[in-house]
Length: 270
Image 1 (spheres, rainbow, N blue to C red):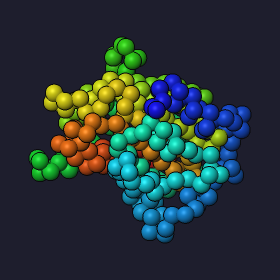
Image 2 (cartoon, rainbow, N blue to C red):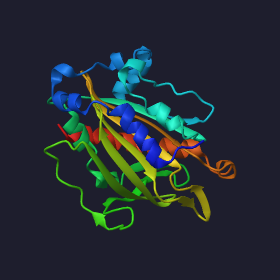
Image 3 (cartoon, rainbow, N blue to C red):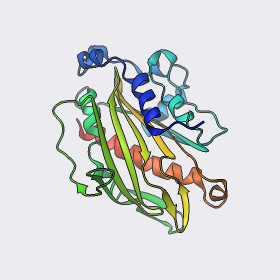
Image 4 (cartoon, rainbow, N blue to C red):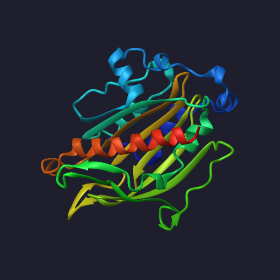
């Protein structure tokens, strides 16, 4: 049985942000930072090297197993939340962006993803056009779910909010306008965004994904080695659509653009 958005969000807040007081005391405290191996103790040396170098994006079928599962003691359970929605396709991405000038904190993680307009114009290799083309021709915040008035990105925040909801529209080169609701919350050691599409996604005259059927949980945590960016997402795509569109390839292209944008945001926060 699929969870409603409200129920899924309630579970997320319960699982990932039960200790607000502890999170407040740990913000910016370098002594409280965890190591990458403490969160992902079972990855190979080759995987670890790739994660710290370029990051890894893995599009999956629903029958495939996730590879990047945090330790049970980490308190990070994004995969469980996403899997409860029974997606027909999955994706996981992970990267650690090493620090350059200073050790970052949770406020830096929040500010790293504030530049929504930075998604606009990012290139991806198009096989049909045999060139690199912008994936998102437009990217902007919106006033609300009902009022689609574009808003400017705010300046870097000076304080970390405990919770926040933002609305985003991107104009995808293939799927047109896609609308997201992003719910932000604070975890004991990091920050969490939970995204869902609040309008259906179409390709030509076909509905690719119905509203609330594309979802992703995104987690950022300042580690000893750098900023962790970790996400698990999923989508329910009708079988007849999946037979005509290469969904894993579509996911991989968009996730790669996204991970590069998030990594650039972390570097800019320094």
